[in-house]
Length: 124
Length: 124
DNA sequence: ATAAACCCTTGAGTTTACTCTAAGTCAAGC
DNA sequence: GCTTGACTTAGAGTAAACTCAAGGGTTTAT
Image (cartoon, rainbow over all chains, first blue to last red; front, side):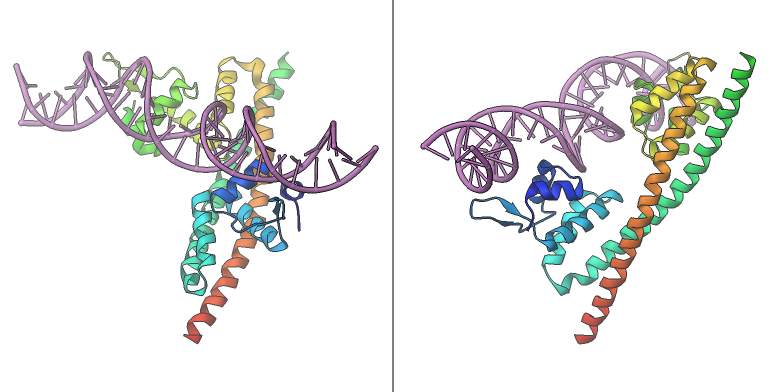
């Protein structure tokens, strides 16, 4: 079991953000100590890993919350969950392709301006 | 010369967004018709292409505005502009690597849940 | 010349994802 | 037992990037 601060150190999220995610239904049913402090289990950490993965690949928190909710509803939601993940995967691949194109453009620009800079410095 | 609506069609941005970008200093000195309507030149379109490229690869609008401003100041800002673009390029490459890792995780999850789904449907 | 469609500005409102504040509770060391 | 530091809640505040509304001027097609 990990305290909220330990989870912050492991994930890079702040305690505020962790509580916010809980409130938004991203990470549900985190257990509590006798005094009311959050205690994160290894399973919670697994979930957090997936949550960060989805979030950092551009899925809105609402959609992540939806996925989490479906997972709680059991096997009859498997189809919807698979669809949700597949759709996200397709969008991610499209976005990565787009990024690749943009990267090429930026690389071209960097080279172009580097050349201009070299020229400018020679003149001076 | 293109009207604002033509630019919307070409770029996918809304007229609201184009005016907003102008106000924020992303696209400056757009010329006007006698009646005060915006007229976008081919050079403006070039700039818009770069702006979208930088924006869609995660550069904040403020930083793009900074780049545009530097470009207006002439050759003595070439060094800073090159640095700005190079830094952005490095960050983009790092982000793309991260995306690749996340994509693998998501692919794994898709396969895992697809397997579970097939199993569940067979049982039923 | 007039209707319909398009464009203008200013300023307010919205969405997303946090981020912080206040006022209080709990835990660990001396 | 007391202090210090970590944790709690509810609710307010913030930043970025739009997005819209109101009220009015311009263009174009008939």
